[in-house]
Image (cartoon, rainbow, N blue to C red; front, side, top):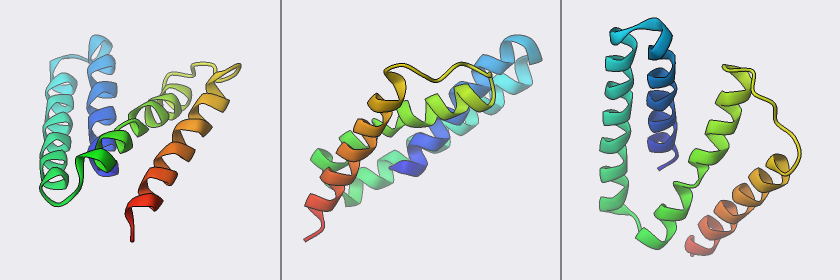
Length: 99
């Protein structure tokens, strides 16, 4: 599911970049987004929805990192504690599932 999140965020990033770089970048973004959807379907086949759905919230973490690194957006204020809470929640939910 983390791989699905990474692919989806990469696809969305390419969509944003396509505004200045053109149609090929947008098409590549759709490709990444589609691959992410395939990984998500595979994950749902083998995993529990109550664990996998919260893991998708890692999209917010990945998006924040991409925004900071690629688009030079500022990261501060409540964003850092919020991201840490998301990561903690995903870790706790994942740890609670492994028996």
